[in-house]
Image (tube, rainbow over all chains, first blue to last red; front, side, top):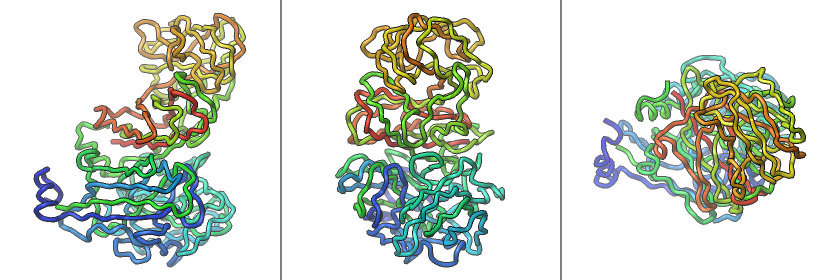
Length: 304
Length: 285
């Protein structure tokens, strides 16, 4: 049976069998614009290790592109490769920063399954998405637990969104296979001139959510997304509709003090990391965080 | 509905039947030590609301109307439960600070403190949730400042449907701060904390029928019916407060569909220029 059968099994697997890997990571805040308090950001757009995502915005407009741990232009935090038929889990996580005014913050680790690049940001109304490439098999069950967010980014460019505040809505198939479900009102509202890496509808005020697009009543996942809708032109820039699975959160309060999470004893959950997972951090900025503020941390993984 | 075992809880989480939202409140008011404060009127996310509608007329509250903390949309016939709350701040002035998550149900705006006549309230609109009133509490939120020191008595219908129940005289503090709870005051023995006292034997409030000031003042307040859901204590700036309601408290408070969620807080000093951050996670089954 995959997974840990007991604490003894866990200790044996991680120590005797060596089924354990530690990965240290370093990601910087956005490269061009100070982060705004109360807003969420996709740190994959920042510099560091793993490197900056340069795939966002590329490829065929509106067509889903799958991501994995081997994606070269959308690198994720490495977690030790495939272990199937065994299952891999996060054991510990940490994050810290010594950068002034970078606290408080909340970090959220997600598995990015892929994204739809949207370059047609001046088009209003429904735009049909291309699902020729399906969501990666094996990293979800019928879309259960999958979430969506919309981030501004276009390759290595640092271009921000234009001067628009469109409402954003998706039409999707939920985890139960119900089609035609839509983001319910109050619709998320894009932020004018949202910078690269920002989740454009997050922040403070009416129509702001963070970090994920709300789902219709009763829905707990996304099997596929069929349409993307802007109520008005975003004038310029490139959006990406990212599909992900949230894994854990790390609240951080103090500069120079590590936020540490023991997921075996402290929060007994051992989030599962599926083969191929593309791990990235989302960041909720609690303060105006300067450009390129550095964050560090580590993840411990084990499998059995 | 709900959870019959820890295993069911874990399975629901694994199946994605969970939602996390972040919130941020940044009050502008210079709050006073020991005076409870209603964060629903403060700027940030969710957007503030101001109890602005027809005076004395019951006005129901719901997420879809006033937009409190977003805890996902309706899940009926499943039931939604509070799994985790996180709160943190990088400013120490107001800490330590107890906080209370409430489902705001209904309010009666603009109670006039300038008259000693009995003020009859309009209850055309019933409670939108917790219809019987079981566990529902009353609080008086300042919306226009006063000299303070006067008292008032509220007549209400309890959760058993018995009308004519009274709070007895409740004294007001002398804090003129908008958003403060006018009956909380650590320096006044007759003050009553965040909620108005209930008549002996009562466990909830279905509606407020009238209010009478014992002496005239100049202010205005709003009477609000709330269902307290959860508590936590923000003790310092060096660590977030993370409350896991399953492992820490052995309970998973129910959050009714379309609940208007927001916080009461009892600061140890001024909250002005203090940003409070946190997240709320719910799980349903």
